[in-house]
Amino acid sequence: MHNALVLVVNVVQRDAKLFAVFGKRLHLDARHFT
Image (cartoon, rainbow, N blue to C red; front, side):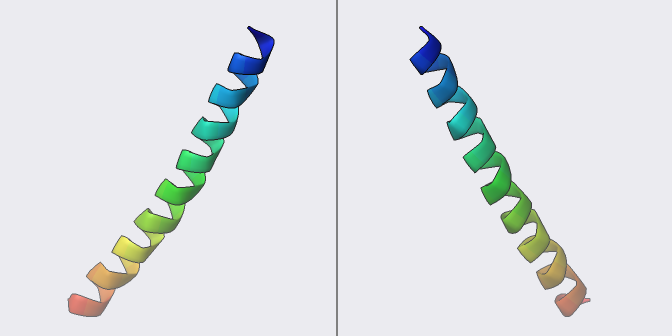
């Protein structure tokens, strides 16, 4: 049970990092196109 919880936390943290990078890229693209 504990291992599953750690795995879920790791996946959430990785997804949050990817989402932050993707959001930053989208923001830069939006600024570039306007």
